[in-house]
Each structure stands twice: as C-alpha cells, then as structure tokens.
Amino acid sequence: MGLRVLVIDDNDDFRAAVRQLLERRGLVVVAEAAAGAEGVRAAQAHAPDLAIVDVQLPDLDGFAVAEQLGALAPTPAVILTSSLDPADFGALLDTSPALGFIPKAQLSAQAIETLIAGP
Image 1 (cartoon, one colour):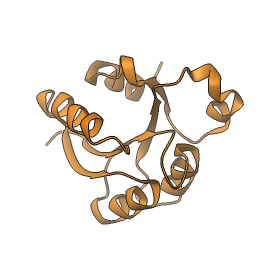
Image 2 (cartoon, one colour):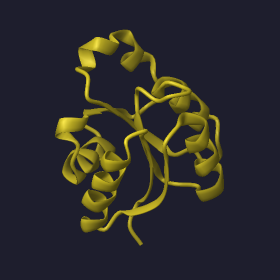
Image 3 (cartoon, rainbow, N blue to C red):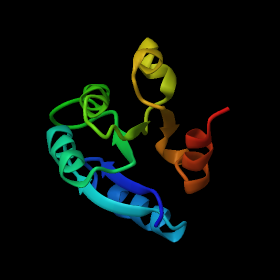
C-alpha cells in the first residue's frame, strides 16, 4: 500500500488535482478537508502518514494545523503549501513543526517524495 495522505485546502479544484496527481504515483488519499479544524478531525479518524496543508485556510492557518497535527499519535508528516511565495511567511516556516514547504505551482509527487526522503 502507498503512503496515506490527507489533503487540507479550501479550494475544491486544487484538492481534486492533488488527489489525481498523488494517486497516479501510487499514494493513497485517505481524506480531504476544506478547513483546518475539519482536517485535524480527519487526521484523527484516518491516521494518515502525510498531510498536505494549505497555509491560508478559512478557520485556522496552516501553521496552527501543523501544530495540532504534531500533537496526534500517530503523528503525520506535514507539508505546507501556498500560492504565495515562501518568503512571505518569514520565520514561521523555520519554526513550524512541518517537514517543509512546497509552493502550489511546484507541488508534485516527486517534490513530495524528495522532501520526505530528506537531505
């Protein structure tokens, strides 16, 4: 079975595109959520290995979601994403418990796999 993924983003089209992209590479999207709190509940229910989280959500920002996901057991790896430039988030990215950040325009299964594999 492939990596189990949760996608948290308020854009329906983006979630559908990410699902298609990941499933073509053998990853399994176990749940989707359009808001942060909904995403945390989905993580509790589905225990994903990885959560792809938009930084700008309607209720919680992605940094708060990453913190809450980090408190779960098992703890999913978190990759933050946004259409904004990573420089717009300054030190928030450095202090986040997220594994890393991938701009939405560069999000791919390969970029995710590279980030998960580490340096």
